[in-house]
Length: 600
Image (cartoon, rainbow, N blue to C red; front, side):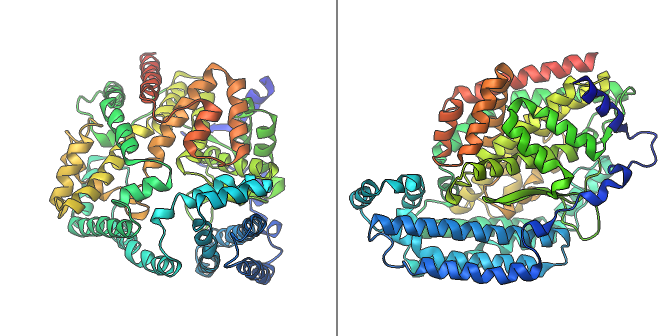
């Protein structure tokens, strides 16, 4: 332990006063590129292997019309589909990584999309045929062949869509029309937002210019969002849902009633977030001597004189993540170390031209997961993203080792997000516990709260606003930008101290990209943030017991509804009114901890 701390001290280098920082010391940058030959020997080999996909698809289609003729047929169809999807995922991973490494390679991304569409269309009959038998008939097949038990939840997950699934020709028609009806809005949004300055202005002038740029196109933004809401509701009705919100929630085993209840509890507890915002503002006022603190001052907050914002070499980052996650046990430790080891060719993180921005992990059951980023520069945020995405990568590795069927490799997004957000909290606390100066400690305590600790309160107004926009459009109450401004101000005032001070923030509906790109996805961060905080509370009380549950759930895969998995592995009840109460109590304590650190 002492050796590790000494090594970290040598590898962490302050930014201030340093003209150049090299995150890849001793020429190690050449080691941090993904070895694509581990997936396919060459682009030609990948293209040639697509014939195997089509052969597997043809073998599956040979069962068309007979899938539920017997338990044996049903089992064979599910197994063939599993193998097919595993192979397709490997191709999708390879092709998307080629695009991410060089975004000029649009052909790879297009070929990946085309291959996915082809397989989805060719295998759609499987879902249709599983929907048809009566419950009694299906129960008899399950009883006659015990091997079907493995796929029980997969079958149930398909059949719960019975009242929302149309005939196969109608489904094929919707598959073709939904992209046309629901995707042009984000394309237009991207064009509109491309001319808007940075989303984190650090001065009054930058803040003003950003909102002037947004306001100059507010009518087109309003047109885009209201048309998206109207179209989403229409497609939801075609699938026999009341509205787009219910459709989206149903897909995640959530209900409108449950979501409304959770958002209401968060709104009622939002004073915790406001208290944190006031604490940050008061601290900035004290350190700068300015009485009038504004929202842009949060981004431009000066560091205490004793604090040098740290930067880390990639070697230090690897060691930090390995040590921070060590309480999760040997199995987790082996997988995270293997991912981070440059000798394994599973990280691509060296900056360069034409690379996709941001960071993500890619992988599939049966294929080693990898991590990609636009470029590791040594900031704490770089490590945070690596910590988050490595969680997803490790989970895939654990599921592969446990031979989890492909159908159970993915669950409602808020649950894997919760697992990864938990690790972000672990990272921030790990760094705070090893802070060598008061300034360091303040920095990491803020990272805990700003990074993901307060995310449920940050995103809840976005989720509430999105639902209200769709309702308002359907009811004819929302027609344009003025209506959206009024709605946004009313909702955001409940969560934040800043809309009352800066009238421009009533236009926040223009500045939430996910609302246009992936409607209702933001809700995953609300649920994910709350679950992660509840997990973290359990972890701090009994690390060993929690680690066993955490790794067991990751290894298990998504073999039941998320609510069931949370109860079985962690004893968390999403419908428990005390869930938010417990989380808020923990956040209140963290805010007071930061207050004490400020005073010191």
